[in-house]
Picture 1 (cartoon, rainbow, N blue to C red):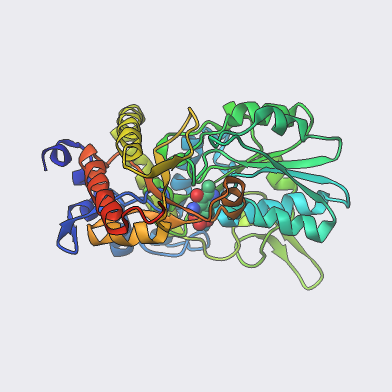
Picture 2 (cartoon, rainbow, N blue to C red):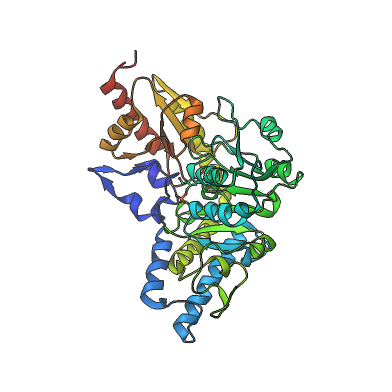
Length: 411
Ligand code: PMP
């Protein structure tokens, strides 16, 4: 247990001290969701135990306090993304809702038959299906940028797909299936130099370091709080203020209006315009606590540990007989996807589960990508800073069990 004990952050996450089926939990599914540190759990408890009230319209102490905490959460997220102002941060349910909001509210009204939407083949369904549906509805055309066999975006091909008709480019910062980090600043420059607005899916990027939306130059950036060590149901859409203010509401109801009469309703500016109804107040506050925790922990040491771990995991996992790593781009976060000759990824996951090792198996909501790679799915280990080399060793030992059970089924 030495190595696990030496990791300075594991003790901050109560779940990591638990056992599964009598074995220490080896949690390697951080791309699906991250575990929550005690400080986030404490903050949620504190809020419900002592501060809970609905925000905005209350004139009493508790409501004013809750409103302040919610506003501070927005400011903290703005700081984390280096947004120009807190009003550029819209709280939504998660990445999925953020992308749908941009597709419906920003892109939809601008699209005419024959216009083009540019995405990449490595998109999660959350940043693929909304664009595909919108294209079907408007008569627009979905253009899909290719990747190399290693899982790297073909940047020249991406650039060549821009045309006079391109109205929006939507792409992921980091691939959830492959770990590939895309050169989003360069991709954004390619789009913006042609006057094309950019939406970035940051779901897999934020857990590995802060993001600078102004340096990237994008118009929209989406992420989910639960992948950033925060609660479920609290996600973020960053949007440039002038764009948000010019967009029609996505949903309507309370809290997002300026005035309502029988004849006419007028709407507030962003971000309230996009936060109809009671928002996820506790979720936003919990997310802010997670960001505060990460800043105190220090992104530099988080990154250094993750890079070391990825190199170790790639070498160790890659050495398992009959196993092939899928996604070998030079720029990657700690995601190791793999296939084993003759063994279905779900069988890999099921055997690992008997050893207390949590990984994900399947298409990872990237079916077009899987088809491009000529496979139905992968098994995927995804790392975070609280993982250790011991976790990787346990995974590799369990993979040995997979290989011995299934033998050389694939020949
Ligand atoms: N995009 C990417 C790259 C993802 O990995 C995920 C989550 N797996 C999503 C979007 C969707 O996030 P959520 O389900 O939290 O909306």
